[in-house]
Amino acid sequence: MINERYDLNRGLAQMLKGGVIMDVTNPEQARIAQEAGACAVMALERIPADIRAAGGVSRMSDPKMIRGIQEAVSIPVMAKCRIGHFVEAQLLEAIEIDYIDESEVLSPADDVYHIDKRNFKVPFVCGAKDLGEALRRINEGASMIRTKGEPGTGDIVQAVRHMRMMKREMARISSMMENELYQAAKELQVPYELVRYVHENGKLPVVNFAAGGVATPADAALMMQLGAEGVFVGSGIFKSGNPVKRAAAIVKAVTNYNDAKMIAELSEDLGEAMVGINEQEIELLMAERGK
Amino acid sequence: MKIAVLAVQGAFAEHEQMLEELGVEHFEIRRKEDLDRNFDGLILPGGESTVQGKLLKELDLYEELKKRIEGGLPVFGTCAGLILLAGELSNDTGVGFGTLPVVVRRNAYGRQLGSFTVEEEVRGVGKIPMVFIRAPYIEEAFEGAEVIAATGGNIVGVRCGNQVGISFHPEVTGNTDMHRYFVEMVRESIS
Figure (cartoon, rainbow over the protein chains, first blue to last red):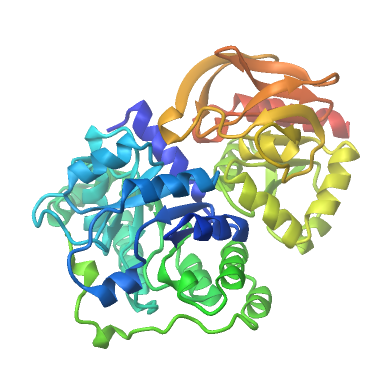
């Protein structure tokens, strides 16, 4: 697990910390995101809210469209492939993407196996609802983790639930006696060494971002105060009334997530937030894809 | 001695960890009020230089920090921090202080697949591991800027007076030698 390439990939995630990664669907949006202060962009054909609305099978984006975005900005460009679809991942590596998101937002290509991410040179970020999922993805080679949240809803409740769950389980592992860690590894279905790392360090061995349902500066600050090291914003920006202003406000709220006075000012006159869908109104729970 | 770490975005916690190991007092700069505290040195961490440059200005930190760096405040920039210090960028418009007389190329080694690790000598520090992540390099160092590190024929570290700028990330390795070098610089500047 500990090799040079993996360390470099974990390192890139470290450089993204304290930042906001924004979903963009074309070069124009990518430039707006970069100017607003995004630390990276996620290139995809349709943002989660539209994927949800359109239904049907959702796949990796057109490589040409991704390349257009790579040419438009100087910050790192990420793109999504389907869970288990290692060929889509190979294509993304071939066009030199900076980070691959093996994402539940797209339709899963494999309902049993995730991608063996150790076979790739490019880094992977994966979603997780709890500590077991996070450590299983890390064991497969993910060098960054994010909460799954519930993409495309503008509802923060699931991201909060996932982050709290991870924090709670890490606290539990930290407080265990050493001779209890073997059983914990068995329950979490992960290697002992990863459980031991969490026991000793009280955190994941990779960077952990929040994702799914972030729509306002306050949402972003909430996730940061709950322990996220940065934030993904998907539909929340370009589905809102004033994307430029909202994007810049979210960036500043992530930097100064403890400064309520500043966040209150940032939250003024942002125009309409994306129209949310409540948890109970959703027919498709994307977070349940890939365990 | 107290060292401030710019903490608007990026790998600032890693630098704090290094200072912690060296037993140096430190704090974060995230907003204007933080500048009211006394500090003897400043670290500009890795991260995204476009984001950091923008936040420096929008959070009203830029003018004051630039004035202090020009006034001789010891400053240590790594990767994005080097870009913030650079007097000129060859493939972009400047976003930072522009106080270091060098021309820097952003993303000089390409995308993440071009990231790499080597071990090289840094003048005044010794041989250390160097981690380059979507790193810049220095195309040209003008008078006053002493080259302290190079690899593969490219300049990756310079010192000019109290300013040190490097392309790589000592903060993600376990090696504190580069930080010790900077702390020594700060110590000399106060004595």
